[in-house]
Image 1 (cartoon, rainbow, N blue to C red):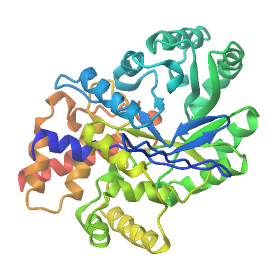
Image 2: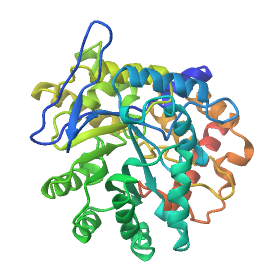
Image 3: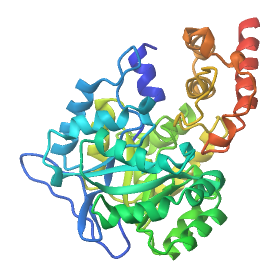
Image 4: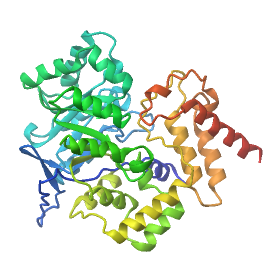
Length: 412
């Protein structure tokens, strides 16, 4: 497996679709170009495919490949994608600037720009205003179309109240610097309900919804809570960090036997197309191939029929038997000693999903290609990563599990 193939397999991040209940989907097609479908959010048309900027293309040195990023954004704009989502800490705190630079080539009214208040980072009241103004500067804009209180779990929700984040953002709405205000949620359905009931002016909510999480992490309950509250939904992680675009061989065979021409990702999107209330889905597209596959999927997208749902359920059940680590590569964990947590878990998941006689060699070679300082055995078990993980993973324990497997394979 070469480096490009490895990146494609481990970072295939894509988005999905759906519409607000009672709103119509519009698919525009002409001879010159194909446009992705849109849905109404209040008085604006939003592309059902949202361009996520958490996993932008990178150079070998790890820096953002801005030349390729600009090319991909041009292709996205040409295809009618008008929702662009970034955040303060994405891409080692450089995503906002990269997106601001790339989108400055286009007329401001032709796209919706979204970022988020990183309440987990707040240490004093003044941080709220400082960060917000930095974001405007980074993104080269005077306002944000959509703005979120970011990554609300129990700790971050307490920070939100402690530092008066909501009143501050309400004032920014009055000043015209925010058009629509919402939040992203990474905790229990009980906390989601508490947050919704606390403030009656939320305009939307961002939730992690996909077929894999639907019953295993109570995503179905969170979806129903948002629907009862009549809150429009943005979907994050529609492919579970790329996992649903890169199913194990047995699960992939189930889908390919039924429809050889359909990608695994398209099955995930079409499953989501059976849900109401979603107006856009975020896709972290690392390579042009991801973008092209998304554009194809979002043109004339249709929900899975009853027979296809049964096929997809069987494929997901088969994949879940792989005992994969549920990491989505969001990299919020930020190891203080530099352990490459997301990279290690990605390698381990590839190993578990591999059904070839090269799985052992592949895992060992890619693991040893990591810098020694980034490997699992360098974990000091400080535990600082655990409360930062949106998936609630016991990261130190899982790192030890990966290290034990590596040693076992080396000794065999």
